[in-house]
Length: 267
Image (cartoon, rainbow, N blue to C red; front, side, top):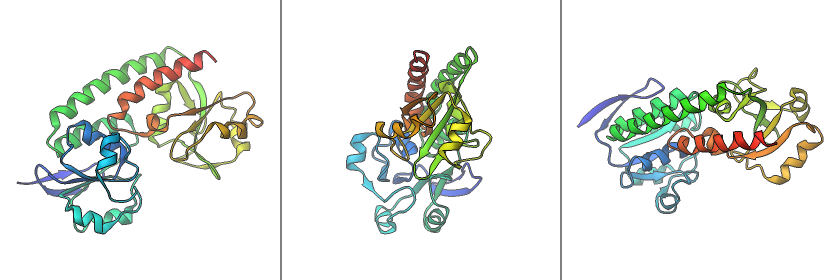
C-alpha cells in the first residue's frame, strides 16, 4: 500500500509500504539497515559502506556517496533510496528524486541521530527494533554525560583532512560527540569544516590533537608533522567512524569513548 513519510529535511515522499528493494547511499545508515535485519531488502550500497563486511562483499555497489552509477541504480529497481543532506550531493539526489522515493536524514546532534534511527525504523517496518536500539543508546550516552560532568574536559583540535588541513568545528556531528569522549573543541568558534594552518592549530594550544582515520586516512607518519609546532599537545590517531557515524555504530562509539578517556588520563 502507498504511504506518505516526511524526512528530516521536511520533504514528503510516497512509497509502497513496506519497501522491499532499498538502496542506501550513506555508510552509517547502511550499517543501521543491516542491524535492523534488512539483509534481503537492501539491494544496493556505496563503495564506502564497509560494515558489515559480509554485506560489503556481496551487495551491489552503486558508486560513492557523491557520485552514483545511475544505470546500476535503475537496474536494481529500488522502491526506496535513503540518503543524507551532508554526505550526498544535492544535484545527484535531486536527479534521483525525479524517479525514486528518497528519504533524507539531516544530522548534527545526538538527538537528530536518535530521531533518524526511530524514523528509519518506521519507514522500513522495523519500528520495534529501532526504538529498542534508541533506548539502549539513550541510557549509554546519559551515562557518558554523567562521566563528562565529573571531570574537566581536555581541549582538542579534530583534523579530518590534510593538504589543506581541515578541522571539525561547530554545527557538526563530530563536535557534538567530542564532549562524550572528554574533549572541548578549540575550534568551536568556527563553523562546519574550516581550513586552518598549522600555525593556527599551534596558536589554539590544544591539549590534544586528534587525527581522524576518515575521511582523510591519517597514519602514524603524519604525527611527525605536528610535533614541532605543537610540542605540548598529545597527538594521536582516532577512529573517525566513532566520531562521525550516527547509526548503530554509536554503540561501538560509546565503548571507544570510555577507553579513549582512560588512555588520556594515563598520559
